[in-house]
Amino acid sequence: MSEVKAAVIGAGSISDVHLNSYKNNKDAELAAICDMNEERAKRKAEAYGIGKVYVDYLQLLEDPEIDAVSVCTWNNSHAEISIAALRAGKHVLCEKPLFCKTVEEALAVEAAVRESGKTLQVGYVRRLGMNAQVLKKFIDAGDLGEIYYAKASCLRRLGNPGGWFADRERSGGGPLIDLGVHVIDLAWYMMGKPKVSSVTGNSYRRLGNRSNIRNLSYYKAADEVDRNTVEDLANALIRFENGASLFVDVSFALHAKEDRISVELYGDRGGAELEPRLAIATEMHDTIVNLAPQIDAPTFDFADGFQREIDHFIECCQGRGKTLSPVEDGVEMMKILGAIYESSAKGEEIRF
Image 1 (cartoon, rainbow, N blue to C red):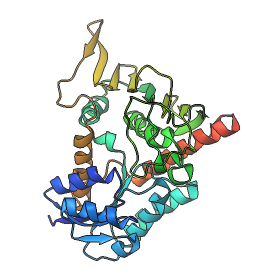
Image 2: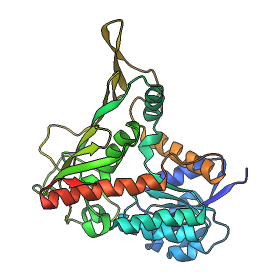
Image 3: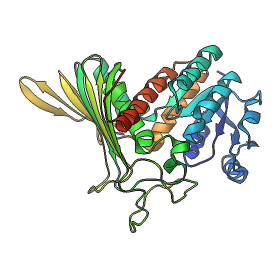
Image 4: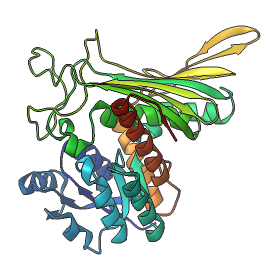
């Protein structure tokens, strides 16, 4: 198979895991990097041995040598850049979410994928974690039976990164867009991606970015600015056409004892916890039994997960597989996230 020449558009914090993962893939070559901040792009280029630096992504897309791009920019530019890249004949790995301000824009991305014949992989990296891949085999084999209820939480006490993350115009939202998209997608994927029938959601802005807090460190955006126009907390009940339901809650700021992430699935033959650590509960010989799969990564491993994501993307670019995170899933997720915000704003259930 020929080597895939890849470029990264956006040289902020998340770009490093993409750059490292491409560098570690024997079938990929890092050909270019692009960022509006030229100095930042040059620093990344020097660190990773990248030969070409751009400040305009359209100029990068004109480069005939580039086969594929990772879109690691602000959320509000994901759709625009992805469409341009597809039309330029590039494969695209777009960081989550496939952010679109309207359903029509999301459908335009989907149409561009079909017209181009190229791969667009949405960055639902947790689908590719070892714990998720192992549990999916149990689920596909019917060991959990029909999954009729799931719970997904990602709660931070102090975790608003600031910068573009806290600017609704650029991010599209707060913890629901940044964190919720991962745990909602993971639960939905494990449930078999059932069709949504209705959404009831709530969002709150009570604590702000808690910039007064001292003595507790947290992740901060590369362009950190002390301002905030996004929610602190969001929760939702998502109902599906098959009768199943999913409850989710996520936060950047919350008066809680500790940060917590959990993804739980309940079927009529067994249940499972995917996070914080893979575990399965079932019945054997009229006895409830807890199973603990012995694997290297029973919880999501950040570096390993992104390496698996990039490796999978390169395989798809080479025609050796189809992406596990296609554009259609990105469109459905944007419908869900949009409905949660709409439900909160209107104070009523949103039906699909």
